[in-house]
Length: 351
Image (cartoon, rainbow, N blue to C red; front, side, top):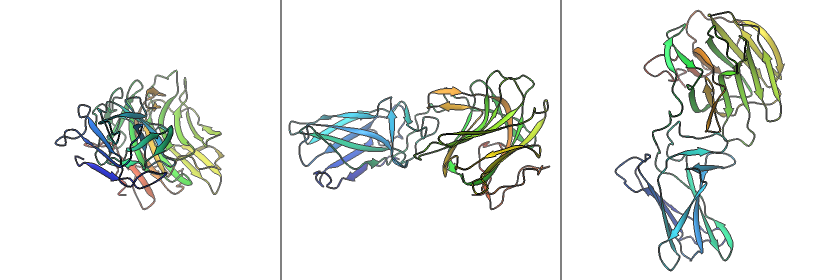
């Protein structure tokens, strides 16, 4: 976390092999927080008219832009008349990746960010290879304006309690199988019907060229659930019957690319099928429960509910099955959340 990041940038587009970018915390004795600036130092073999460092998310394909403090780059200032040495300091107060891939809700691990030097020489722009961060960033405001959901009594042990106002749960990245699978969840809805749609879960692709998702929502002014997918150009949806008042229900959704079908089950009863001919959600995906933090800036589709037992599998399970105990894991389980203390979002799948 505290080590200096040093990279030698090899010759490309006329750039010298001696060009070096250093990125390191100003105070190496501390982790990078909202009070700790980082320093950029660029040493060039040949002079440049100007230089900047662009921010990117390197593990996305294609590479996506990153905003730090609302900007996509930092301008470097020359350190001498020879214009071979440039520097800048930056204190990270906020960050957000285009494509909804990183934001301040979760600390950034080493390698999550990359810094790409851009030079101007004689009116021509040249880019040096991007350098990945060697330090983590935890600016400490990842739960604002989001409140983490409370823990309440569930059907089996503890459940997450979403207030429909500011609380959501986020799992920033996990392995998903969009070609075939099953999502099981236990849901308890209050008597009061909401005027706007609330989300039980929202699973979206991360770092892929085409943004796709799967979602389970509560329809406004009703006790109906809606399972829907977005394949990049079309929405497919299945709407359930009215759910019973103040009772736990088991919701199962299945999707199968080979069979070209998705299906919704409530308490073991099929609510219908729809076409599923394009994978939705990526092999790397992000889960949001209880609502969405749209574009890293706005809380939307907040729902009031209890959620217990959440399982994602890479096979199509029997949607008619009703468990009399907490969900179990097996070799086909990708994620299993019991929401029990002390770590409600701990994955118990064993993967």
